[in-house]
Length: 233
Image 1 (cartoon, one colour):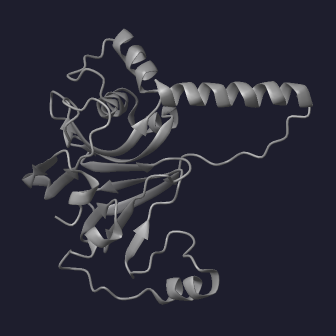
Image 2: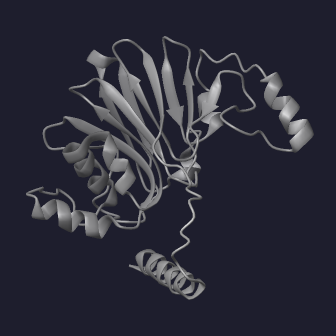
């Protein structure tokens, strides 16, 4: 009930008791209102996803996947596009997503949770790991409901907040709860309870001296136009 406000259009729960795993979702339906129920699994139940956000190039990716033989259960769900793309390309697929997102994919065969956050960190992702238990949520207060949480103030974060008026980096106000940084992914290995953090995207400041001022103007105008078109499709 702590996150009812985030998703008035439905709720769902997925459990794999053999892996001691549960995934839950409160959904705000925006794309494929009737067909995009979550948690969503592939037909063979090999992969299951919970996803918060919107993938702007999902229609293009869907057409590409269909040309390669992928079959979709939904009409135009961007959630299923992520799921099918992971099924085909694995963790490397995150680099092909254009949009705002935070998602977790359970890989039943590998016994892993693949978690990823968009380049700019538009969608939030909080997680808790004490070496024995792993939990994640889109809001910190949801993790505070866990019986194992001590609710201790992170003193380093308190210092940062009092001096900077915000908490930088991965830390949060609560000791033991971390934020997945923008442009990062996290793989949780369920069997040995191991967390693996990876930066899948970083901003590049490489100079292109061969490009003129006029070319840059055209390139920026074209990029903004394409981005706006993706948003309005």
